[in-house]
Image 1 (tube, helix red, strand yellow):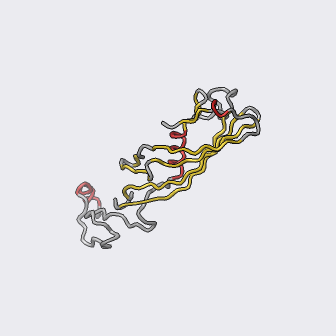
Image 2 (cartoon, one colour):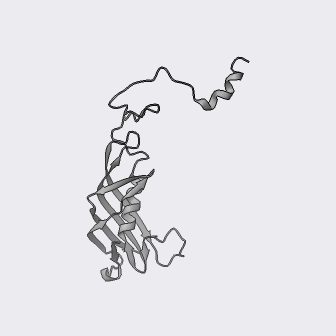
Image 3 (cartoon, one colour):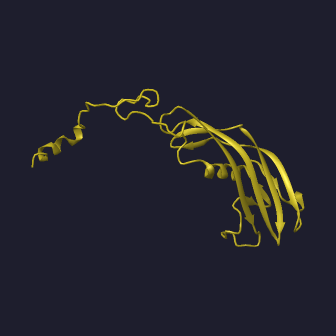
Length: 168
């Protein structure tokens, strides 16, 4: 867990501080598959500013996420630039949106914030290439390497009971 102690910064209204630190991220598990971030110790830039009693946090990082393609299971790699902003008013009620979930006892949890920000930037499907054809649903072969069709398909035996109604 990588945190910044906000008390040690002594930020006054109008002040801006920049912090650079390395964050170690746990792998993402999406659809039962494991996706790693590269590098494993990710350099993160956090800008902290104060305005009217509240604190504004800006996060910047570049990450590469690697793992299996969600269509064909080949190697996939995605590069993301992540930019996120959090606002924290310590005087706001605990469940209020003006309080950041990443600030606890004057410590900013940069590791959790970076991981969540990366997860929000990832596409719905991580693919080896945009036009990935996936795997054949009949034989399981990679359709990118061996495009083919199965012309002689036997009907699914679960539908056999409905065959009697075909002629009606």
